[in-house]
Image (cartoon, rainbow, N blue to C red; front, side):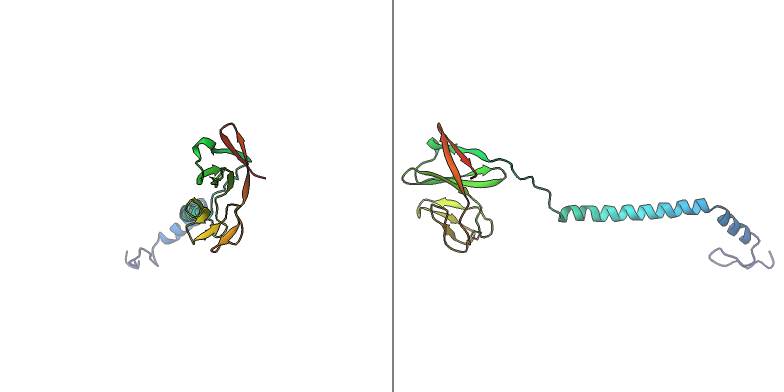
Length: 168
Ligand code: FES
């Protein structure tokens, strides 16, 4: 024990076991490789656990476009003159309206300005977008406010009491 110089961290310069320990480490590279593998995979798993939810949150889900070309939008008997109603056309809203003279019309209810949902306004007899006071006439033409284009108009047919709306 006389000449052995032990340091605080456990290493010793003159320790008789020092060479043996180093030899064991060299002789057992598999253990070192296994530890490196464990550390590497846990680091990778941590990265995946952090970034996977973030990436899933950022990328929007795929929306399957409705292949629907026609839909029953409502019943004639339930749509009073000078009124309108929102219906679902695939995954988009549509607007059916009945004019004061009894004609039934259908449009996309998505405003051409910034995609708000439009509605029929019986007082003004117009289609109106509440978001920025966009106005369309009963032919879907943009006549006031910021909307840059007319509303998409749909074809309307009736089958008995049902209102069938289809894309042109
Ligand atoms: S979104 Fe309709 S007027 Fe702006």
